[in-house]
Length: 464
Figure 1 (cartoon, helix red, strand yellow):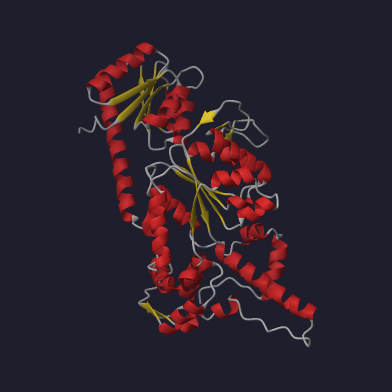
Figure 2 (tube, rainbow, N blue to C red; figure 1 turned 120 degrees about the horizontal axis):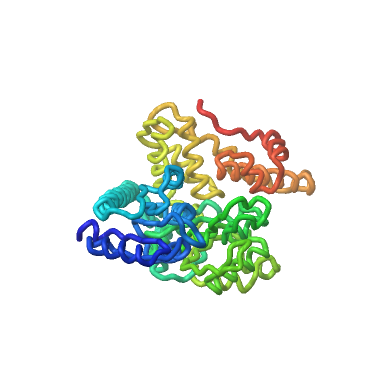
């Protein structure tokens, strides 16, 4: 197949005669061609046609060429845009290039010059595609390859993903924090027919309730005070691909209703617009909550729960497959050794034994953070017990049994303080010791967090 035959060209021009001429010239050269009468129709056609090259008129009704390019760059960033106009001027050319146009031609156009520009643009498209292919080749830990573990439990997880991936049904991933729910969601996407399309992540714990609808569906310029320009939401951005709703159990009630509607109707409207937008999106959701209990308590909609709970995938806690701890530890040492400027040959049996006996309440994510911390401590080429000694203070030390001599209230206070310290430390580890994000996740003020860290002697690990 020639390069021309593999290149898709979309022509957007309000003059039917121009569209016909361009389609005939390019079609005669073997290009795959589709046409649109304006920018809005071009965006609609691009949803299914996925052009490599866009030829767009500068002056069109409803949406001009500059605005059309701007939208294409947001939604189809790999598309190479060429401006074609009868209103040639230096100012418009500069503006077109500034907005991302590859080249600029004026009407009446010369066929040879047009074909030369299209050929060059086609070469750029080909180079970009090759770079993407090479990038994918250099990143083997993707999809199922990222789901590590040789235990029977993790083998079952990979087999389950392979069974669920080919369907378009909604998948609910269950598991505690740090068990790899997002990795599993990405694997479901990469093993599906949608793998070449967008994978868009929405963390339901970090989006303010007032902005939730905009994050889901986007908004029009002027829809609310800070809406200075149009914004594409996650569902529109993921058209053709997958939306991953992380920690969906944290969604407020109002947002649950909005999500239910898009799952039922397969369409939505941007905030500030009454126009319906239809999308082809697969939804994968994850939660560390007991959703049936939240349903009983009235905190989660029952109808939404059943919409999400079509197919389920459970990610086991690290303690359930502790046999994989050694494999994970060595993987993270290899992954982060060069990042920390350390050439690590191995991990000592004593250090490995400490890792294997740690409770790992934060699961694989906590283990990953612990390995990074040990790399800061290590001075040689072997991680020793001393390099992971911090685990003794961060784990769940057994509390003294209660006795009448202790008293109930002091005992409960001690247990509460131990639990509080552990939760704060785990959250700091998950956020990379980002105080603002930690305070947000714990739903306390930064000042309170600093006071608690001082109280419990929690300090970010530093390079010795």
